[in-house]
Length: 502
Image (tube, rainbow, N blue to C red; front, side, top):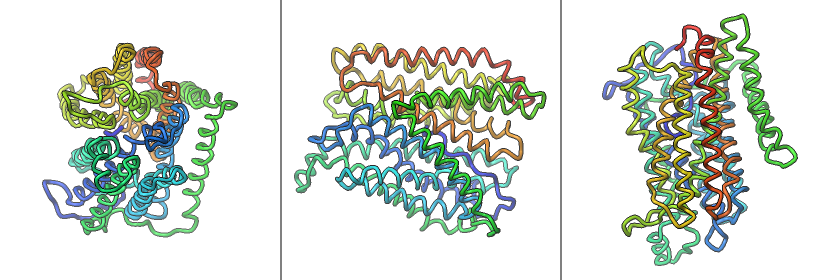
């Protein structure tokens, strides 16, 4: 999901004047580079995480089963999005965006450097630190970008597009750096020459992610003179801690339920994470009040996003394992670490985002409606997983061409272009004015649950054999085709509930 940073919090009433550079407030570029390096740290670590967990101890890993590793991975990635909800509230009520970003970045860097310690006891505490830090940083650095522009400033969308590009540049570069340090035989040979244990190469990759976060913090602090006027702490008022504490408590309860659903006796909880939104669609969608009916449409989009991310976010789990176990490790004699394939999505985003932006502008009023774009996103996603069916069958005979994975990531990115920016925009347009913040939290929640289900689905990937992988990919493709068909059939119903929002 590298193309979509967190939704910005509501704009502050007054926007300070800033020096301009290339037609935009100069602090935009400070935030651009700070976010670039923060995303470098996040995606650089993510590219290694599942692979490190399943690697045997003799090769420097944790030797976890695929099922356990992917469930941990799903819990980790979903927790990042869940903690963004109280993280945004805490900044909005107490800390201010700027201080929240600074504290969050320090905590993230600490977590990455804990992962750099070759001690399995540091592993889970390190993940917890990264989750806490990202929950503070992720929503609030986007909020700071929003606070650089007045509500009617026509440069606002372009400013966010520049900022989004920083995200994808960081996500593109990161796997090449951390993957080379963790997996490449050349670097392992260097470690031997320098007198270090090559089995600890994974931790050098994690350390590189930590240095990436430190670079982001240095940019934020050393070149952040102009952003001192952006994201300041709000005036202290009695009871300001109430909303952040209530939000945190609710998030912890939800996290506990999601974590409990991993236990065999409580797998049934997973159905409620989908059935409850379906019930809300029906309940709100049948209301006589036009504003309430819009909430029914919002939860349709919520379900679509949840299902989309459940397949899309397997990039770091099952698809990463397919790259490692069944995809060619050499291309024309050149060694290709499996983590490098994680750079495919961000580079496709960089290439395709301008194309889609131009397409929507050219089509104007003739462009597909938001619910139709969601249906198209799901169709593209399903096509990508269909590609993996013959790839899985070929994998039973030996390692396959990387073109299969690259084709999958291409179609996934097509889907992402139809869903991620569209969903965020549609949520904010459909939400009643007094519920915009809550609806942005719902958007985060859809991403969180989608990431969790991605880990659940990936847990059935298997332990090393390509047998039955065609069924693994085929069943998911078929299920998403069915969901996409349902979404297509629901387009008129959803559009009626959206009213004049397109």
